[in-house]
Image 1 (cartoon, one colour):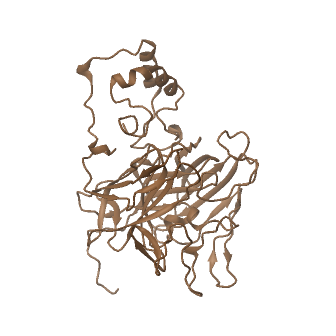
Image 2 (tube, one colour):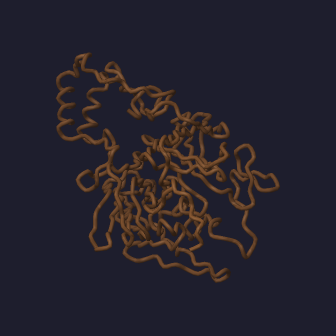
Image 3 (cartoon, helix red, strand yellow):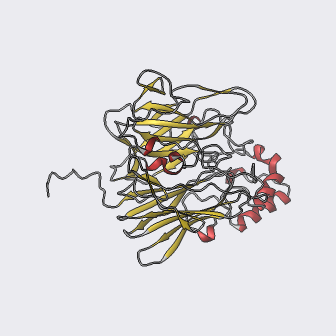
Length: 450
């Protein structure tokens, strides 16, 4: 029970019978309409997932019949054992082994627009550690729209003071542009785009940047990631934790200080879990050539006339009133990998997102189909059985957007939609979690020069 329990994000607790009974008719209505529990994926056109929470029709019929009968209380002797949630954590595996606190207590204004802001925490250990389970938990669910935790190198020309990025002269960069490398070393990582035509690097490529690794995200209903025994997310000693926070004013001033809980691996780690965004070759080329197809046409790379650097071409904005605007990110698999999980992320015009694997022999398999994407329910889908993909395969993430009057969530169908971080902008992020088959972290590195 991740949401409907005391002191969590849901508007009411359903933990006890006395909590649930007054909501019986509402429960029936939402369950029959398949709005609850939220599971946007189509189970008939997707692989099985170990965190599935959709109901079979027989279960729905049972709930409806219970409500129609007056929602009677059952036999107390048949009551299942209630889960123990330690100190408010959703994960049921006991207290975390280590907890990072957001390095500042942030004050969210009562009104206005909150930009994305980043805070930084140093690694507190002297050797790399691996996390088997991670949980990102807000202190005030009302004001956290969503958040993310990454391990990163600090941007060029910066330092961290009290959890906030500063330039080397001590000036805060919390809401200021990052320093630029002097020419000719200026590089694409610092090109944020500013919605002036070139797509912001961070929207399409954040987790693929050299030195950056995504740990996990928090959105309502999701904030825990569990990895298989022997695998985990690396917490490298020479990296920083970057907290990317998107706050939402609620009409009154509020303070917030999220926590990142870490449960370390209990078995030797053989494989590091990596997260990458569709559209880039991986695993061996995380910053390779992007492959995007927009409305049936491939986005061609461009060459900077001053530096000679080859960059991704400009991905078009979504035109006004388009109800079926499609973008496909293609990920070539250059050596065997094992796939564990998938996370779609779009905004208010997001209509659907589907992952399709094409095997070397040309056979295609849909691994996840989200036909009715819901911005309010963004789920991390954990495969019930890891999926091995041979070299020569490719993964296609097919996203469709609805910028028409028919989209009830659309804040402005008459406007072209830019790629950006605010909810009224758009994102296309088809996150994929995998390990590299040839990796074995328990083996000592070879000293052989051959």
